[in-house]
Image 1 (tube, one colour):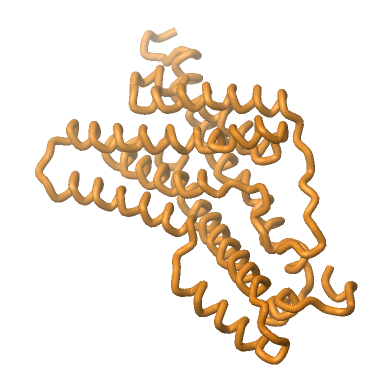
Image 2: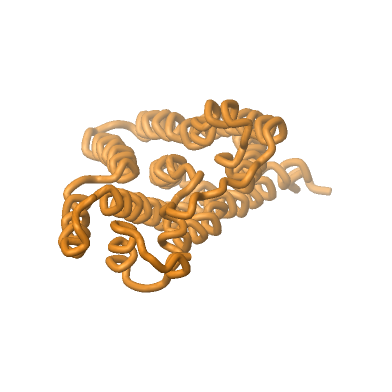
Length: 285
């Protein structure tokens, strides 16, 4: 056998592991899709935590920039689909937060039945005048990356310096992306309920980080190793929390946003009913 023939370990670490990593990355980004579709159908985010989706957008932007600098196709194909998915996830979360606020404002208005249409339109106008909390998070993260990429592109720096700046920035973003589900740790411990931890996202994140650790060790790229090593650790912590605190279903009250949105038809009509109630209880599912 020729000495130039790559070893099995080399093939596994340099090609197989990152290929699996690309697949798992896309599956990781896709994991919340089903939950968001369910939330959109019900009209409420419920226990879903959309914060990781904002960091997902920043994470994919940063790694795509890093792949351009290092000419790493594995990093590119691992993150390009994720950017598109994250845009859709964040847009869905923004719409749901807007709708929840719209229902809340309409329901809290105690004006007379005759002014229902006016109060609903007023609530719509007031909601349009302000950003939702998730919109602010996404805008802040995108703004940070616009500043970073503009600075590294417009100011004369070497490729190594550019790699360092983008590598450090994306490391910080990825740490937040992996750790974001842990922001609900206080709620999980207090309620002894792991419903806020998304099982498939947790599983895919952990497995994904493991394979990227193998690849990063093979090519000796510590910008990839450090965040994925921490991501693997965060994943194990989430698994422990998920096992310690069983997932319990959250039962919504009969006048919740979820059930108000269960009826088909124009949103204005639903909001009007939410405003003053309806004599026919079967009219609101």
